[in-house]
Structure formats: structure tokens, C-alpha cells
Amino acid sequence: MWEISSGQPPFINHEPDYNLALDIINGIRPEIKPEIPLGYKSLIEQCWDADPLRRPDVNMLSIKINETYLSMPNEVLQSKSDNSSPNTSSRFFYK
Image (cartoon, rainbow, N blue to C red; front, side, top):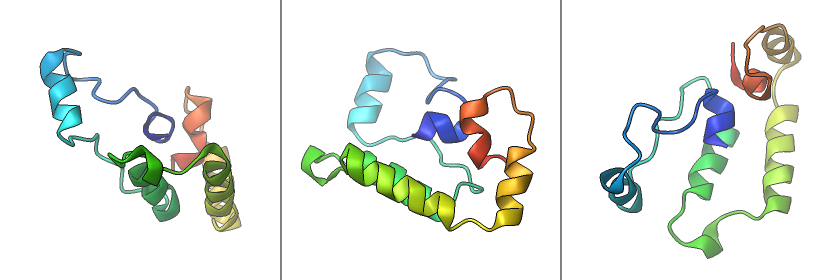
């Protein structure tokens, strides 16, 4: 979810090594961009929960993403759909 919202893989500027793996285990997370809708931000953070039983399942993800999308004003949706970002999967989140 973070990759879709940011348009890039997480930790792109870090070496994918043992130290990064330990950092992730210890709770390091990529920064969520401020323009990301709050509902989607909350959902990303829920997916990062250390306890797998507290993470949303695919059905809940679908419901919450749809709710976030539907709660956005039409003018915001229109401006986002006009964006010509090369990563079309993340177009929903860019201004």
C-alpha cells in the first residue's frame, strides 16, 4: 500500500541488507507523504502492525480503500486523475 501511494519501493535509498532487515523488525517504516488521505494513511499503519491478527484482511482493505476514495471531494479526484505521473497505480494519491 505504501508503494502504491508513494510511487516507489520502500527504502529505495537503503541497501537491502541484514541491517535494514533488523531496522524493519525493530519498527522502522517509510515516511508516509502528507498528501495521502488520512483514511489510507491509517490503513497503511494498520497493515504494519507487528501482530498479524491485528492487521486488516483483504476484505477490510477493499472496504476501507473504497470508503477513502468515496469520501474525497470530486474536485480532488478530478485533479488527481489529470496527473500524468508515469506510475498510473499511484495516480490516486498525487496532486
